Image (cartoon, rainbow, N blue to C red; front, side, top):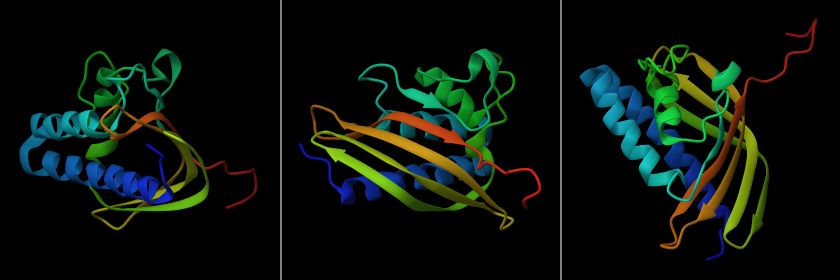
Length: 161
């Protein structure tokens, strides 16, 4: 079950469409609708059924920096969770478009990794760029699953715009 570059490009597009769907669900139906869509997204392309997912969200800190469980990912994407009070809901920020800009991919059998930038555009046209690394594994059914998701804001050296 070899992972191909096309598989990775499809997975990246699916991830972006998922964030847009969560944002729209929140706008149209509130937090419970967003949670329902986010939970379905997590189940369909993250690998929490394979074991802990190595997930480091962009805007997480302290003891809650890493999110190896589905509950932690859901809280990060939707916020409004008493167990994760600092989460604002990354996926409910009005996203309308996603562009991935690759740096490199590593492909080896049923495991692959991707690193690059992801640009998310919200409904007001503001663009947020994040540094992303994704690790993928195909499960026993051949479904590509995210097993590593690292995200951070681009470094801004002092004195540079």
